[in-house]
Length: 534
Image (tube, rainbow, N blue to C red; front, side):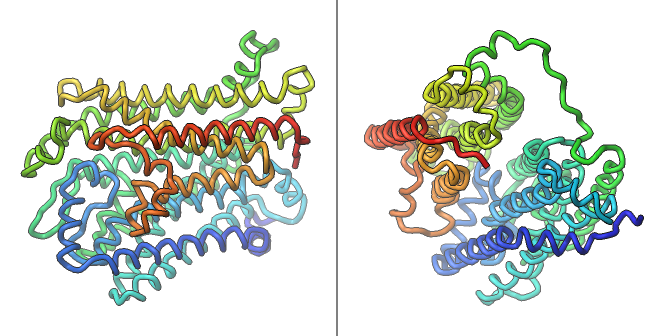
């Protein structure tokens, strides 16, 4: 039988099964692109555009999170300001779609049924690649339409859409390998996100080490950015240089990675990954004889992975802290803005705030483990042993919160260590920035506990919605939308003190009250309700 036999039947089946979810993804990304473009077009004249480009492009900390400025134009500003957010969301859609139609099908037994029919060995992966590729191609035309609607050049608008979706196409190849290596959906997702984080760090470092030319309004990034696919699309400089030859490494990488994925299919059985499950101990360790020990063991691998990532980030940012000093020393009048606080301390504290926001994903997913164990039915065995639901939930919250603070302290310590010999930084200022943001993270986590107790079937969707609101309307991405202050204040991160502000206890008291009330309600309902199994 031909190895690709049945591919197009599977494509039709995947589109029918997954049409609504993909429509929500694509519609949401289009609306987001439209909202960003509308905000930029209505809020800025040419002088305002010059000021904001100079402010952002001359700031080393902001350059790490933006694409490098390609020059002075509305289209160029859109690509510089929005591309990181848009590409990360496109990557999220790509990872989820590839996982759903490959690894998730194998976990749920769908692939066994499909394989029992006249379907070739390569058909499921090929169908997943085609569906995900179609979604990314749609985003090319959606972005083109949005930009052209604001009277930007049609060809350059198309180039912008291509540059955004190329990252998604690259990640299709990465996920084609990841779903062969890992034996679980979560494992494949981790490989995808670790790859994204690795390449983003390289491009961020290259942008930080770059130089801004105030005459051309262009940032010349360090050459290391070409080692990252993020750097490839960013160096296209759409609306100015239009280096579209950089499409080639994307397409070559996609083909090579996909071919590797096909090769790996033949080296494993359906339902299994190339990395086999590790055999456990014959007898349980004594640390597993308590709910807290069980939760810590279940989350050990993920926690160690985050320790490595956060430690590497901290050392990297600390090591390049002297770049902040050199770049900021050229800006006149900063001493009147920062006062007694070192400008390097301020920007390192802001970087800590941004990285700590990323820990929201870790914290929420750790809390949702309680719900996943309930859905899988494994929690019944624990409850049958005499462990109360209250104790089980309390230990999960304690475990997740302990890990959160360990990661925050590790981030601060590694930045401080990395900065030794590079710049003088304040340990207390950075620690305060990390702990302050932890209050906001715990506030969102408390709402997740509330959802697990009160609306268990919607807990995951509710948790990710809260994360989207907290991050999307917060100080990192909120200003991109030019939103009213009322919406901005919906994010708990908007109420976290920065080093330049006086300490006000009221926001932290309000967050503490929300945490207490939400967790109390979640506890009470979790104790009383029936287990909700799929």
